[in-house]
Length: 147
Ligand code: DQA
Image 1 (cartoon, rainbow, N blue to C red):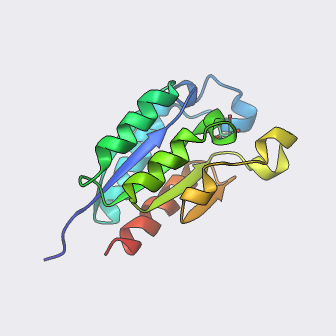
Image 2 (cartoon, rainbow, N blue to C red):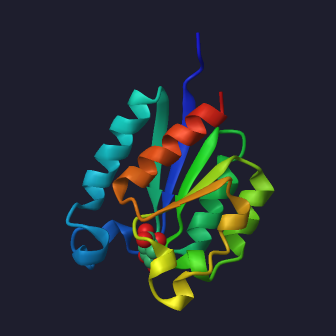
């Protein structure tokens, strides 16, 4: 019997405000809708997803550290910390859990400061500009990779 893969999904600052926040960029669906979407995708992929959201860089680093030995993969949308944090990719590298970076919007086609991602080099893949579906692709990627 195949072991159920455990995937940790981390969302950074302001992702809890989906629906309210710049809907022309991030869509009209809420964070609760995103959680339901991830749950459904994970079940379909034969995985179990735990979702975590924080507006604080340190809390995200703590969560990554605590994932060591407990999760088979990490899906991470570090939000604005993508472009500023070195501690987050350092933590991903430290625990060595396969990770995929996701962005709802296409960060390559927005402001110049969003084109730099410090997170990417600690991730196996980056998926951007596909809305919720990006999380689906990332969960499936990690479920396959972790088998
Ligand atoms: C984002 C893109 C970031 O530049 C931004 O700061 C976010 C969300 C995205 O999902 O498109 O908060 O990560």
